[in-house]
Length: 142
Image (tube, rainbow, N blue to C red; front, side, top):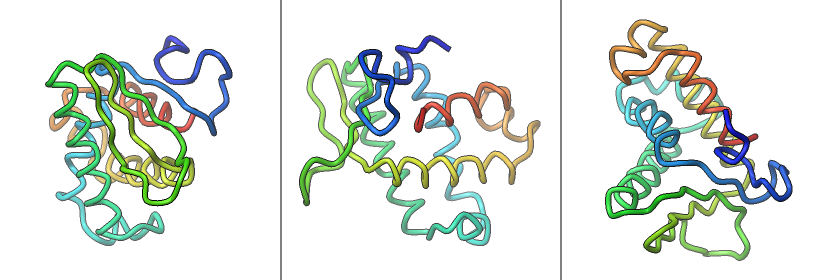
């Protein structure tokens, strides 16, 4: 993985802004879209609710739409003020505004989807091998 694919190259700090290329986001999105197909028990085993899973998928669908409209980078940045919009897009960059704790929660849910599906089913549903999927998911908090 190229470090510019996942972290802010200026700081490398996981608590700060990080960027992801649309192709890597696509890997993560393929797993996120399987959230409705896993049981509530799987989601809840990660300390999350079905509402958390639905919110994650909704955010990721907005990001995917912005990429389809031409965004060439996906930026994840910390919340700077209360009530801030979760997804902001301009022509080149789509920004996801989320606390690092939210990104960690998202990773737990996505990892639970991977574990629930198993490597073969994960590949059949996403088109990506388990190692590539787990690397992309991990980049959300690197």
